[in-house]
Image 1 (cartoon, rainbow, N blue to C red):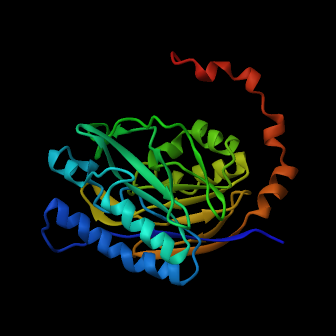
Image 2: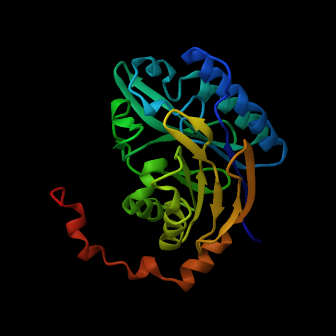
Length: 288
């Protein structure tokens, strides 16, 4: 009997045309997502993921202290608790990427993972924090992740999370595979320009190298320093994109993934067998 898992991704744009306070803007983004989340539950989605920092704009295009007001604790914040209620309602695993406040003055770019019975399973904190021009001022807001590369054993699959800029670094993608991930979700906020041609290259490469499914989520619409191009997608362990959203509109993308494909691909391509960790010592040399 095959292990089919129905997964969903939500890509949205920030509401335009109205000047809102920071808190009101965050609420408007949450409210915009809720009908898509409900639709996912009604359509039988078993694992759902939203875009990076989903309940707000991508504020990292500027350095303004006002955006710290969007941060909230995990798991004791309102957004995580709301998603726990929805997860219980639909027996749906939810990956919740939000701005985390650990304590006063300590913040992370984080995704909470909630199981199908509403249980909070844990969180992943983004490891690689960019500071690039124009518009990538994340080091102003976030500390680097310090929780490793956990894999969460949900009701339907063992899943990992890698957030946006992380996808440029194969080491963590490998660690997720070695830790048992069957599906890796990469909630992102990436605009047209430098990295667009990599969007459909790097993550299928991670899927091939590690023999798992990848789910890539991006925003749509124009914010701050550029235009987000959407194109959220799922790819299988052979690196083939099996479902993809458009580049302009808000969308819930749904795909049925057959996890039995993982064994088939790994049996054909024995990358884990043929690894040489004994030869990779230089990779852990911080001076290189």
